Length: 255
Image 1 (cartoon, rainbow, N blue to C red):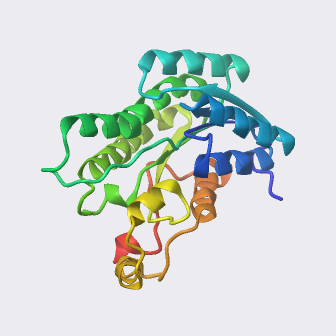
Image 2: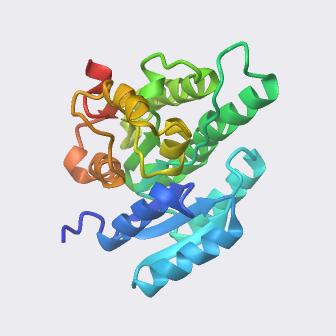
């Protein structure tokens, strides 16, 4: 096993389950001390127990990433936990909602923007003070919906485009402090909660073939393929990669 993260401290948001949890496991298996953040305390407790039982070094803090005071407090606690130095932040937390412009109400717009864009902003804002001590990396989760138009994804597309724009801004502003900032833009990953929502209830052969036509590679993504991209971008092997929108999408945005 490659130990790219020995003696490295990593924070992952939205990590009580799903891909965030699996990334915590993978960072931990490569030697990192990991803090997982999520709004669901019960799921966090279960996640920590599982990872501890596997011999990994993991701590959890419950966090609503849209609450500025809570984010400031938790990252203060993380600084104490890690004796100030942080090496990697993965802004994974996000939600999706469906609807065109006319169908999307303001409450939905505000909620999806808050979790995806504001949460990324706040966690990055309070992580920077810790990251610049020794230098490090931020990896934001965006989406192919940030860079191509997709019907019925008005607010999700806008929120993820904001994440991309913010990452580019941070990359330029913070590179001089030794902080690299990049985005991953996954295509559809069927084996995740958001992937299942995107695929919807119509799983007929005709519907699935129509969706797959968007992917030159001929299939949807697998979680581990997205996770591997994140672990690469956060690693020293990507030390000259900064401000990149890294599509992991089977050629979807190239078509």
